[in-house]
Image 1 (cartoon, one colour):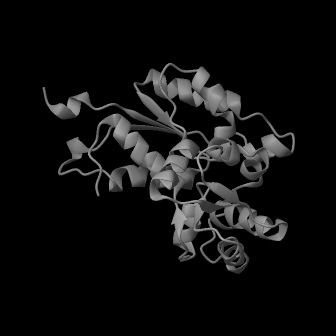
Image 2 (cartoon, rainbow, N blue to C red):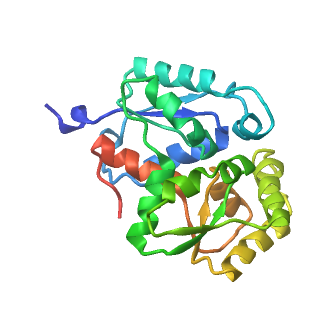
Length: 237
């Protein structure tokens, strides 16, 4: 039997948002060491844009995203996904509910990011994320005991982070003025962060779109690498 027939199928529970979903799929493709189409992983994507906003649900009494997330997870499992990945940091506040609804593993992007920072010997990192991710403390809880401490932006800088996510990337604006967001990044580095955690899946895209050059770890990439390892695919060095 051809070895590629034994690969596990990756299911992307996407739509949170669509560009972040596309970015994850691109990173899966770009980081696979493959000499042919058949050596790439098989990937199923459900870009479910009906999933309500996660930050609104957590902080402002918005609609519960779990029913739509579970619907997508079960759909992906039903069409053969062996492992699920969610390209949305804030969605990981609901990780346990999604994982309990299916019989396949749901990788945890924040845990994979923690492990990557530990391997790199990082002691202090600056967290750039949505209000929902910051205020629920999911990163801090996941990092607890790891030896990696997290700094979060001051209030004005946090507002700039939210604006680049929603007013910049999610709005599709290539002409967005990222000056305030740059100041937020530089503020964390000035306070002692060795690297920045791009703790919203729109932020790696913001760094690319607005040509930002700061030391950073990309949780979307760590999730892609974790999925490739699970699927049994070779990873490009």
